Length: 106
Image (cartoon, rainbow, N blue to C red):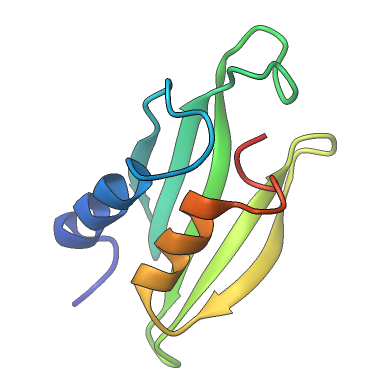
């Protein structure tokens, strides 16, 4: 199945509803070339003092290797940083939902 697609976009949205941080905001999952961009209002004011919509994560699928690549946004310098590789989308969603190091939901 090519990416992005509605089925996986909805899986990500549903999975993020079980996240551990910032439960009072509604993140969006937008299709981008080769994957999905997760954005959310910034409630903590750590990344944006006005509480604007910020980039949370970028999920890209490598069709050749069958690997999901997860990136986090470094808001201080405004760039995407590679975070990890996953064989299953469910594992990506689990990592984003738990975010034990607070690198995504800042």
